[in-house]
Each structure stands twice: as C-alpha cells, then as structure tokens.
Length: 220
Image (tube, rainbow, N blue to C red; front, top):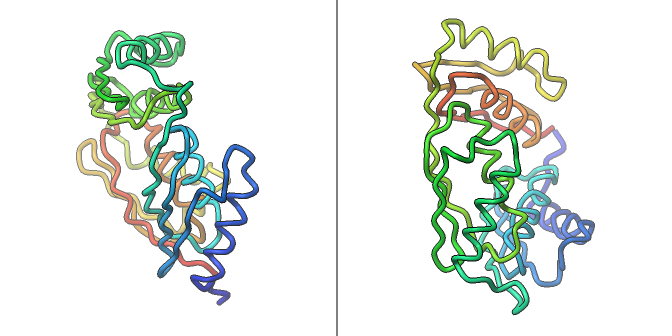
C-alpha cells in the first residue's frame, strides 16, 4: 500500500492549483485531513471556484473536497440581477441539448436558482454546467427535478452493462441496486475519477432520478 500522507496531499493539491493557469494559487489556502481537502480564500468567478475544486479532486489520495472559497467579483464583472437573469436564460436557450422552456430562472444578489422539470438527469446537470461560465454569477442553486416519462424495466441490467463498457471503471468491484428510479452504488474503486465516472454513467441512464453513491475509495 502506498498511502498518501495529508502533508503530501496538501502539497500536491497546491501544485495542481498552480498548474491550472485559470487560477491564482497564491489566493487559495489548502488544508488536508484524512484525505479530506478544504479550500479557503477567494477567486473572482464561480467558474474558478469550480475549477479549483476540480483541480483538488484530480489529486491522488483526495477523498472529498470542502470548497469554502469566496467569490470576490471585480468591478467589471458586477451585474444587476436582471442582467444576469437575461444572460442565464439566453445561455440555456443557446444550448440545444437543454429544454430551456421547462426551466425557470431566478437571480438574487448574484445567486442563480434553477427550477423546473426535465426528463433526463443529464439535462439537469448540463443546465448548471452551461451557466457556470457566465461572468457575475456568485453561485448556483439547482432545484430542477427529474421526471422521466418512461421507466425501463431492466434498468439495473442496463446500468451494469454501461459500467462494464466504461473504460474508466472496474465494474467487477461495483454493486448496483435499484429501487424505482433511485440507483445506489456500492463497492470500492481506486480513485475519485473512477468513482465519478461510475456515477456519471448512472446519471446518463434514462429513468434515473436519484443516485446514492456509497462507493469507497481505496488508494493503492
């Protein structure tokens, strides 16, 4: 077993933040305890806050990230809530994969709330991904509900096949349980990336409205 110490994880996360040219690593504090990384400090956009979290999660040995970064918008990025709401609505319309007419947008003090009903889980996730690039956003609250029109009778089998096809996951070590439209994942994988790949594969399945990820990470 080649376990990473918290000090090693902390140093590697700081190096990864420096590697990402979108970020000013000197503005971000990093602490690590039992593989849990906490990010503090500030960035100047919601996109960079998410980028910092993604960078930390790429580091070997990281089990989870507590993202406590604050967003300090530069004066040039400040926008009224009305202007921001219009930009969000337009961004959703421009993405042809998102049913924009089924999503309601509310903005308060730079925080964007998304509501509505969609048929597929990936549409809910894509809606949030699409708007995170908009300047002026301080945060996103995604309250979109997934309401499939059809529930596949062989959902468990379909998901297991998808995990087997996925080159990033070791399906033999993942157990799938299905209760209605809720899918629970159990087992052990060797990295956060593998765990995320398994979860993403499940979210892509038609009929899934909730994913409970109980997969453990055993770094070797």
